[in-house]
Length: 368
Image: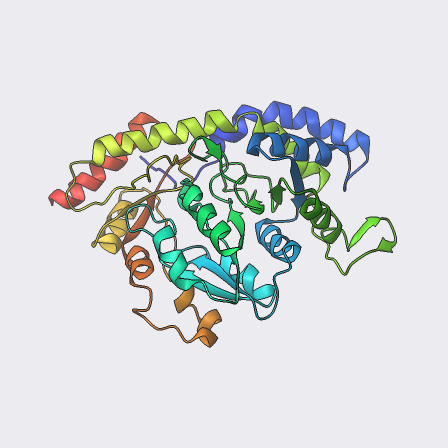
């Protein structure tokens, strides 16, 4: 049995005919940028996220950068970020001239630990930027309390958790302004790069719309120095089709995760993912941890099971951030996760037979 780490086959089959039909209409329409298809998707995704506004942009990194710009973050400012996250979160902070200030996660949930945030707040802190890592919602109520107490703003990085909730409230709706990615591998993925910003603040929404379009609301009249980062009509159209099925796809991911839990819970050398109280996960990734990670990955590969490591080198140890002078041991929890984590296949279409095979191979490895 050959099981890839990720497959789009089931998702694409379920929408293929609709995609073809809508693409024909898209070609006939002849409008490719900032048209009605984008407006429709923005309205739909805002409603899905539980926010008033949504602005479609070129990708998730741009969504973060524009969100920071909208809040006036710049040189001399500090932004609280997780010590374990994809480097894009840190890069966005750097691109606006601010400094990322890492905070360790809970080892149980992998998400930023609210109890550690206040220790890193200084007079320069402007924003808290939690990341809903691997699909699980951060402990947003505690984070918002801390932000309000210190007069800070919040940007959620919701790239991996579209549809997750904390206390029954959707991620991407807690922060002052929030960023997400529709990179193809995301739970709601485009057929190329794409991203979006969600907010309830009309002023921030207007800034995002203008900044993404060369700083212009009216063609050839530029209010600010903006960039070109617009979610195009074709991707918006395809995302609208996929959004209708996102809840069912997320439910399938949750069912797969429950099966993994059930079949692996008695394997002593594996640590399974855990949920914080009142948090849900849409399992963008199903991440286990083991001290024998590299051996296990090699064994799974030998048995035709694809896996990935998210992420093998924490941001503070990347060469790109050598100027911050962090060294190994400065963020031990992030480093522990990076050296022991392994992502197993989790995607719509993964069958129970395949899950049994994967878990049997894992048990065989540890029983050998």
